[in-house]
Image 1 (tube, rainbow, N blue to C red):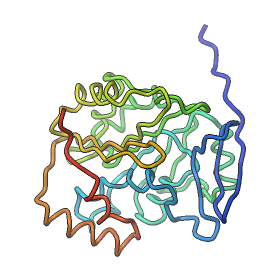
Image 2 (cartoon, rainbow, N blue to C red; image 1 turned 90 degrees about the vertical axis):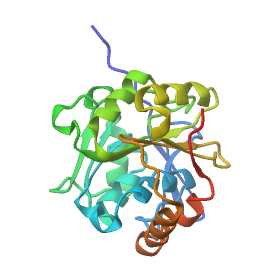
Image 3 (cartoon, rainbow, N blue to C red; image 1 turned 45 degrees about the vertical axis):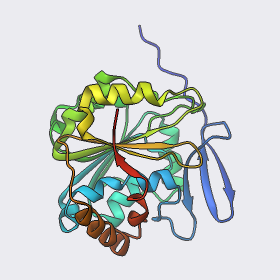
Amino acid sequence: MRHAPVLPPVTLSEQDGVRHLHLGTPWIQGSMRLKRPHELVLQYVQRMMAWLLFVEPDGVAQRRAVQFGLGAGSITRFCHHRLGMRTTAVELNPQVVAACRGWFRLPDDGPRLQVIVGDAAHWVHHGPWQGAVDALSVDLYDHEAAAPVLDSADFYAACRALLTPDGCMSVNLFGRCASLARSMAALQQAFGAQALWVFKPTREGNTVVLAQRQPQHPPREVLQARAETIRARWGLPAPQWLRSLRPWSP
């Protein structure tokens, strides 16, 4: 019989008006600015929203977002509250869900929001989601933040199967022991090299990768116009993204 994993305790810290979520270690798993709870604080979390560059802004609210890994609920809150999307998050640790509801302004479930306590390795095969997810965010780390918990070509292929034809997965690759080359090889096997876009690493060492169901390479002027709209409409630093986001070149 498979034993349930021992889940780490959730701890909190605050500094300079920002509340952080931890899993019993100093590693930050998510953050929220207390006076502006719907703002995305961490640079890599902002970059996880760069899929917005590849869709028409006026249609975003009609799309569906799924997050694997809740963290401090930042992306979930943003997609639900700021973008008006149908939003679902899957989180393994029920303590994280409770902390987000109690300390990180995560709303209760409703018609456009669902938070599931479960394993992304199982929910990635959820039948009703196949081909129905427009924006999939994958940020799966344990308390040591050593490497992605799910990082195989099979897992990424299952993620690709969730996406709509113009859907996109954003994945955070970070860890003291993680190999970017190994992760990129798994993503390339699942999505194809032409469907991958990669940011330069942040100062903290997070590399955000966008993986598209179907490769998109819009003209530069289209990306620049959308970036300005994203900045004006949702307050994200999208023009800056274009300085560090590039198509993947193996």
